[in-house]
Every structure is written in C-alpha cells, then in structure tokens.
Amino acid sequence: MESRYLAALSGRNEGAPPLWIMRQAGRYLPEYRELRKKHRFETMMETPELAYQVTKMPLERFDLDAAILFSDILPVCRTVGGKVAFVEGKGPVVDFNFEKFAVECGVESLQFVEKAIRLLKPDLSVPLIGFAGGPFTVASYLIEGGGVGDLKKVKRAIAERREELHRLLSLLTDQTIDYLLMQVEAGVDAIQLFDTWAGMLDPCAFQEFVLPYNQKIFAALSGKVPTIFFGRGLGSHLHLLKEIGATGIGVDQTVDLSYARAFLGNEVVLQGNLDPGFLYGSKDSVVEQVKKVLEKMKGDPAYIFNFGYGILPDVRPEVVEWIVETVKQKVTV
Ligand code: CP3
Image (cartoon, rainbow, N blue to C red):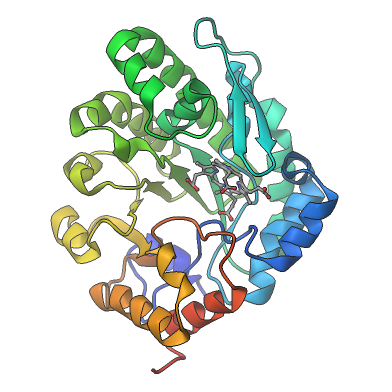
C-alpha cells in the first residue's frame, strides 16, 4: 500500500491525513533521555547506529506516517568554518568569524548522515524524511553565535554588511545542495528545509535574503524527491512562498490553514499546524484542538498533519497517542 505521507505529497491522499511530528525523535521520550544520559548530543548524531536507534524510537511507540532522520540543522556550519557546541541547558553555541570565512570542507565531513540513512532505509515501514536548515536560518546561528533571539546581529549585517551576508548565504546554499543530494542519493523519500527564522524578516528582506537561495535549493532537488519548506510566522510572506519552488509549505499556528489553502491554491501541499503549546491540557482539550485543525483541512488530498513547531521536551508521551488516535479518527469525544 502506498504511504499516506507520499500520497499527500503528490496531492492524492484519501481519508485521514498522514501525520508526523516535528522533533518526534527527541527529549519528550523517556527512552531518548535514557540514551542521552550515556552520550553527548553530538555523539548521538554522529554515530550512525545511535542515530538509527533514535530515529526509530517514536515509530516504535506511535502509528506515525513518516520517520525523520535524527540529526540537526547545525552540523553544516562546519563546512564554512563554524564550530558548534551543544551546551547543556543552553542550546547551541557557535564559534564563527564573520569577518573572515571560507569553505573549509565539503559535505563528506557529514558522511555519518549518509550512513545513518543507509542503515535505516531497509528497516523502515514508513518513508524517511531528510532535512537541512535553510541558509538564512543557519547563517543566523553562525552570525548570532547561537540562540537567535531578535536577530540583532543579522539585522545589523543586513544594514551594514550586505555583501558579506550574501556571500555567506551563497556558500551555505551550495553546501546545503550537496548535503541534500547526498541524502537523496542515500535513499531519503522527501526533504524538509527548516528555515525556522526566515519569517522574522519583513517581506522585502525575505525576498532578498531567503527566496533566491531557497529557490536554488528546491530547483536542485526538483524531480528527485518531494520537498517541504517550513518556517515560523509566514503569514505575511505567503505571496512570496508561491514562488519558492517547494512541493509543500509547512506553516506554524499563526497561519490559518484554510486561508493558506485558498490563497496558495490546490497545487501546493500544506503541512501543519497544531499549536504545540496546547499539549498541556486535559485529553478532551487536546482532542478538541486537534479536531479544530482537522476540520479546516477536511477531505484535503494534499494535507499533512503536524504541529506548528517542534514538540517541547516536557510533553507527556501519552498526549502524542491521543493526537495520533484523533487524526486517525479512532477517537470520539
Ligand atoms: O525529530 C526530529 O524532528 C529530528 C531531529 C531534529 C533535531 N533538530 C533534533 C534536536 C531536527 C529536524 C532539528 C531541527 C533544528 N535544530 C531546527 C529547525 C527546527 C526548529 O526546531 O526550529 C533548529 C533551529 C535547530 C537548532 C537547535 N538544535 C537548537 C536551537 C537546539 C537547542 C534547543 C532544543 O530544542 O534543544 C538543538 C538541539 C536539538 N536538536 C535537540 C534535538 C533532539 C536536543 C538535544 C539534547 O539536548 O538532547
């Protein structure tokens, strides 16, 4: 039977929408936290057998329609000379010289990803999603030195160091294309580009610093695998997303899905957008929120259920079970 996820990506899904969850392979799972006690996050990403194990964890618990490779968007930083450390309780800290930078190595330095994909593919019963960060979001971590906050340094660079910023985005775009082609070659079934912070730019800056680079990436993948562009707060950028060249668009909870469908037309696949902040209530309240999202996209053949943003570490795993049951129409409240 064809996977629901791939059917939706080709606009032909019937019945319940497919679902997967951003950050499904992560800290809300006790078995992840257990394994994580024994290894650093970097070690888990860079050891194909561990990445294999973590990628499969959520699938062993829940009836999800896709797997996403356990990795991160930041390893690609090393190709342009950025050194990333994931600091306990703080998140990523990035050491990068924005005064003087160049390509330092190619994506062969990320071959652990290719190996993990090759291990996973024969053992999965659902499609495997590969991914990378959008050049703008990755550049933001490089320039800000870690957590992006209000993008002060990036915005200063837009005002004062436009040329260098374009040069960095251009280098990252080429590396990201190589990196994603490596993942496609290894067997991923679809690609999601996480440009999480691109929506923090006004539409003009988005047009200059996000659109052309992402268009180049999606053009390089065109005809190979279906692609999804994801960002937060994209409500004022929908007209630009029409031109981005991805098979689908993943939106956060600030965008109305039925409005996005009407505005973007039936050609594009839509993914989203349950507010992950709604996962802390009673079962009835969670089910009600899921149903609100489902109602908006009822019968839509090109819709994938997801959250508006990644699941947070303090969510109880049984909440995911309620959500899966509701999306699969096994729950009546
Ligand atoms: O399950 C999945 O979705 C696959 C794995 C995945 C991770 N990060 C694992 C991770 C994916 C797709 C990402 C993407 C990612 N990483 C993004 C884009 C999407 C988003 O969430 O905005 C960004 C901006 C990052 C950068 C990043 N990585 C941050 C800011 C942090 C620290 C904050 C946090 O949420 O922990 C990480 C660490 C990270 N990435 C963890 C995991 C499981 C936690 C590591 C740990 O301490 O165990």
